[in-house]
Image (cartoon, rainbow, N blue to C red):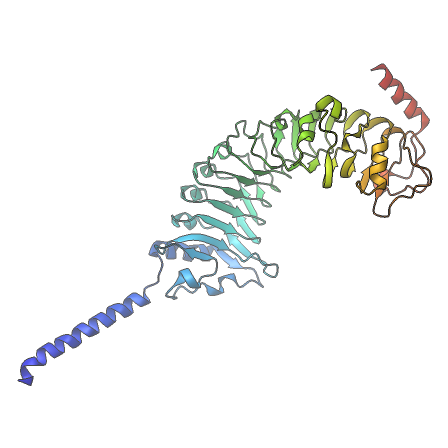
Length: 419
């Protein structure tokens, strides 16, 4: 009877062996899409660790679970790569060198692509525009060259684009500023040229274009913008486009060639505590609460900074800015005596820095016997007055002459009275 059951016994053993072999083979198969694994291999081949970096040390392509073991790789539920962070970003890691592989475009489920600071060179692969799920592209502080790919203008879910501190050239693709989901665009510290796109319909919150070679006027921007910097470019024209930006917290248009008056609406925004307009060709007078809104008596507050220096602002200093903590009005054409509100603000510590040098001011009503607080920097040199004794907290750029020559003061005062 035992002989009759022997074939069944061997059949059972065979089935058990087959199942175990299948399970073992499944366990040995990498838990990642074959397409994505091939793409990661090509990406690794185009990059290398700078000596001192060990980013790729965990990228073992014989590993059974690259999604878990590869540094910088995050996968979704379907074993497809969704986040790729190249480099660690740690202060003790020098980053990566090489170039960005076009194989990045094969990671079709990618939502975030991050390249940490290093020495990566070459162009940004245009095929990245095929990754329609991308929400974040951050390729900062490397040596990337060439243009911003126009194909980025087709990414419907792109929220953040940061290509700062590279060597990118060309103009900003006009389609970028129309992306429906774009909130943050940082293109600073590159070599971008041309004018800004005339249409900016993206509901941006943060726009940083500083330190480029962008020219032309400032276009109308969405009212959602809270952070705006276009400093150190070649831009020109009036600042009318800023009038509708009621949500601004930080504004820097310094070191351009902007002209005309300063929009008074900027000073009616209590959330705008950092305002940098220095080194332009701005003209007209300082804001006045009487002219703008009698209920809005002053501007500033703790931590506030306003820099209007190195322009062509004329007229008397109004009391409106006396509450600003750090105020630069130097190197303009301001006249008259400094209002008492500023003197009080300096001596009670509300204003900690007040630079008024290189104007045509005629007086600073210093209270008799007052002593300037140690925490205050006040500069009054090279005006049409002799600065009060004991006030000499001026930068080296102010020069050594305490007052203007009388001939300059007479000519300027005469011109002002005839205009």
